[in-house]
Image 1: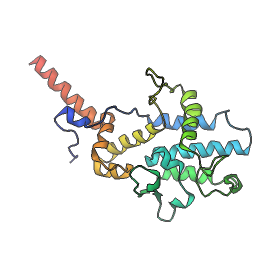
Image 2 (image 1 turned 90 degrees about the vertical axis):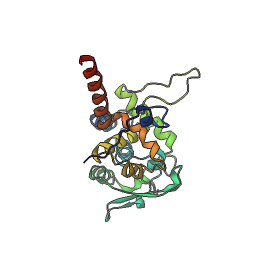
Image 3 (image 1 turned 45 degrees about the vertical axis):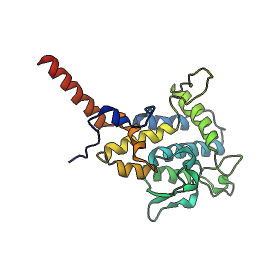
Image 4 (image 1 turned 120 degrees about the vertical axis):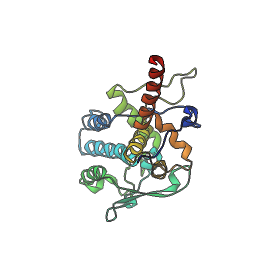
Length: 235
């Protein structure tokens, strides 16, 4: 029996969420990887090929592990326990300051295996999983730039923030990969909000509610409301 996830009061469902995050389709995520791998905006040498695989693996880490960009950018090689097939997410890289252990998805493992086939000198001695040319690991603001310029814009998905000052949160950003995974997990676990909250590292269950409008439960809810309205009209 599915857990009752949607409350009867429509307003309660949204909780404290002020905005509903956009999500990507699974085919869009795969297309993002293809867009990076086919991009001409990388050096035409082994460094460029390595950077393409680095950025693709970083993108898939954010998506498949449901990570905040800062958590993904700061991953260490030794955070991954391939014997136990788990990854240690460090609390020093999230606002809750709490560690968590997540399972390594098989799809992500395949990306990592290809990534580590490249010569180790490309990491320049860094113990971080995703080093940059300038630093031991890619900074979140640098990843933000990469995702915008090498993924969103080539795919025609970039929508600049619109407000009086030209600032704010854009419609699509790499954080939406986390929202996409959260929505998928809600569907895959039959609405187990506790499991999803722990997976994402949320300290408050109310934070999960912002993902509900995209999941199948909400679509069922809308259909039930519509059916009730139609039955009253035709009654």
